[in-house]
Image 1 (tube, rainbow, N blue to C red):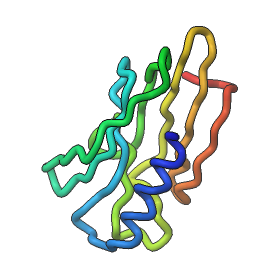
Image 2: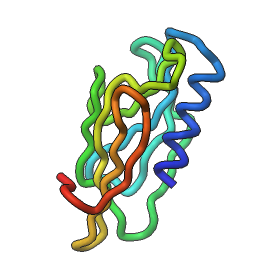
Image 3: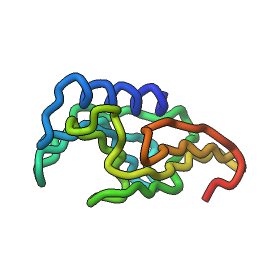
Length: 116
């Protein structure tokens, strides 16, 4: 779900090509939901909340850019590169899953190894 939402945000930013507008996903640590957002300057619009499966929580989120818990894609990038790379860790009990966003390309990797 998270990977699909990141890719959809990236695609929306690339389709719009508006330099002042960023599409992305906000991951509030400790929450059982993430938010699909649109940021225009300092103004934030939460377009929808997405609940995680029962028992799953966001335990870590750190991305480059002005707001560390937001993975944002700007329209000024031709290839859909994010404002900065980073990681979000999802946990359920002892199981941890890391979703990593690579800074230069916007590629997304999912792993269970080395999760913060």
